[in-house]
Length: 338
View 1 (cartoon, helix red, strand yellow):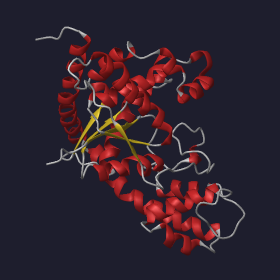
View 2 (view 1 turned 90 degrees about the vertical axis):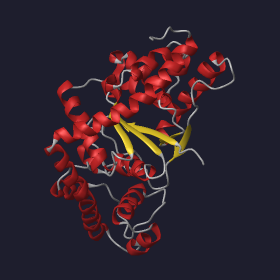
View 3 (view 1 turned 180 degrees about the vertical axis):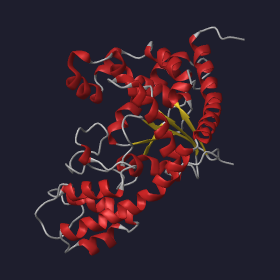
View 4 (view 1 turned 60 degrees about the horizontal axis):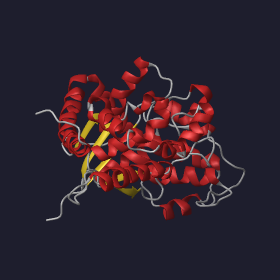
């Protein structure tokens, strides 16, 4: 009998989750939990690598966990937990820090981009972010890690650390100490772009709130944001036209949210103007978000149940994480507690 493969993923609790988070990540996790052993965490330790409000972080951490479940993550099929509640994440990160060359970190693209914005205020945590991410992944002996284009480099770092810096140097019997994970490339159409710029991903950090639709936006707000979404002057909408990125993005959203395949949508909208199309997209978006919002409200009314789910997930994750941490410590010569 083939062993069920394990998947690990998570998102930061920085700002409200949006359509990009749901359609590009969480929706895939919901499918994966049917066929894989699935661990999903709220990666709150990553959220403090930049300036943050402690009260907002605490609130957003629970909100994010609740939205995981509202989007379809099943606590009976997946382990849902908060990263910082398992100390092995920080502990393994330190061990990996001591074995990861500095020049590996300095070439990370996201660090270069974010450090330019932060200037002299850039933190060591921002530089070290990918090592913590490697610890997150490697702790759970993940076979697969769902990644988008912007996270490929981080996963490659995790693979390099596991293979070159741990297994190759410290394995005495030929058996790997850490499992080297493989990327799980997300299916086509999962990359959701900004409503204000079809060439950039929808992002929580974009200062323009009209660039994204959050999972908790009211129907009125959704309608306003879609009305303001950037378009072009052409009549008739098209997929995959490099000169019309906004048309491709909005059509892709409509296809996913309406449940219609791309071919059907292409035919339906081939001669349609934006004035007729945007109400269709608005209706599909509001209809898709309604069950998520209802489930979210239900969960937040009963915080005790949410805490029970997170406690269960933490205990399940902790068993795996502690086992991996002990294995690494032992290999590095660190004396273990009896």
